[in-house]
Image (cartoon, protein in one colour):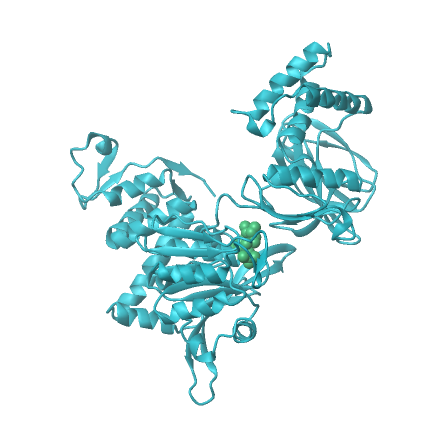
Length: 595
Ligand SMILES: Nc1ncnc2c1ncn2[C@@H]1O[C@H](COP(=O)(O)OP(=O)(O)O)[C@@H](O)[C@H]1O
Ligand SMILES: [Mg+2]
């Protein structure tokens, strides 16, 4: 049995086709009734997904082999006939000869520059081709000259997190956000092609790789991290590279709720904890989403707090203004003592951070002696958040107490919360979940055991999060803030309501999210009232479809203005309605049916 997805040649909508290998099938497009003919593959394959990366030229298919159950990532590009390929080669060579500037130094759009150049060349060489073929050529030319060549589709696919090439003549592997690790149909034909590609990549990062210095760690122009080696000097298979793609749009708590990585209740709990300066460590395996959680919960740090962050490579992204981001750097030149001249590691940064008197310290990942300083910082009243590689509380404690971290047991008491992340499979798809939230309650004075309390747990069967009924941390915050038990319960419920509202209205960009959080902190009663009005609007209309606030600024404006103080501002007053409470709501453009 072969299952495939094809695109209608007339309206471009997706059509599912099923049949035997090599069978020719004719099917009507359900959208436009156009007849589509397709010849099925000769293998037992099921196509799981088809999506465009760069329409109408680049598409991706995720394919499953029904026998071996292996999954593949197929890049589909416009096919070129032999004569067309030769012509493209010819044009590209002529283009290289005619270029007198470096493309990365062109002011303005390099794509437009290349289009003009190609037009000029075609004229000069008296080559007549139709517009379709010219566009196809331009797609390949731009990819080669200003893009990332063969791996350009992989760089352009937002679902891809990692790309790794372990040598020539073997497929490039990648990590897909939904389908996990996949083999792609991108391959470097031989070592020459691969090593010249690696050299070009290093130049794109403004660095230099050579036989004398065959290893390079660099940041790509889009912020992605790349690690590469040149030729078979170090790795026996030849040149290699691994790219960890940068996400320009960081994951926010709204995303975590959307992906069901955390429940709104867990997020509300972390919101309370972070706002009230409770310490936490985020633990989990490689790529389980630790750093993303760290970044997401950092959005709950009060807007005016002083924050210092420390990382090996820049990943933390905050919207706070009083924030000093620190990044370690490797040394150069001679080795003095046990390190290279000029090296600044996490330990140095950690010591420097403490002198800067921050209220919050964020550390990308703790591994070595900087962890000890982090615990010292906790013990001396700083609020710290960091990630650490460990897959259970037990292994975490073992790691912290063992070499090279060596945190003495009494110091563990300064840690309040451990959030355990996991990367696991559910129904063939990769998912990230917050597996457990554990509070470090005390150290038993008799047995010296670490006493913990589990607050939330993920139930893998129902894919739901369970609250286990007791939180020492919330109780501590309650006493600190002088709330009674009912007030505390109400506060938590309100925050859950705010988070659900933000999720429903798709407030997910990290700056927007941060604005909403500070609006709530400044005027919680008004904020709640606002969102309830919003919900009532929906009920009055008797339409259960979600509504969407089109511009976050509209909500924010309300909270930046004092009540009734903007009546004579002509700009703000436009399009506003006064509701019963005298509290101004700006008429929102309501978009229906989103999500
Ligand atoms: N909850 C999540 N759901 C889906 N993808 C996620 C989630 N958290 C992180 N990711 C993605 O997983 C990759 C690894 O995340 P990262 O936070 O860097 O993991 P870690 O720090 O554990 O190595 C990133 O590409 C990120 O965008
Ligand atoms: Mg990380």
